[in-house]
Image 1: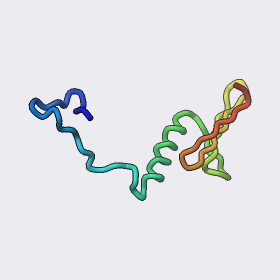
Image 2 (image 1 turned 135 degrees about the vertical axis):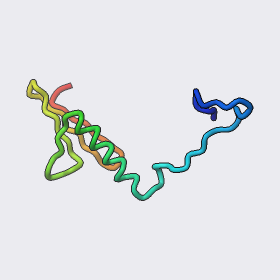
Image 3 (image 1 turned 45 degrees about the vertical axis):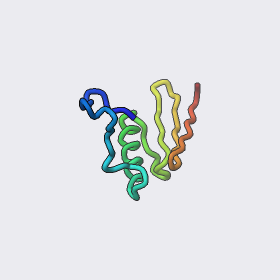
Image 4 (image 1 turned 30 degrees about the vertical axis):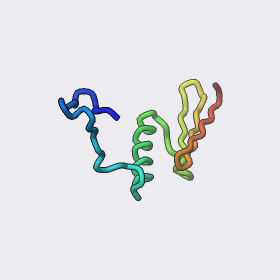
Length: 82
């Protein structure tokens, strides 16, 4: 590992930063990941299906559509055209 650019300390080049907290391995990390994904996908103008909250739909102006299926950390994308 190397020190991040701009944070180098002279005479301590062999030292690196240690994370105090990590997102992985915590009990709440799946929920936090989903909330972050939800914020991002809503900015992309996808709407969430009311019957299944892991299905998102985006309708294009030309009548085509994109369907996004989310399962844990896997995603399947389907659409009406390439």
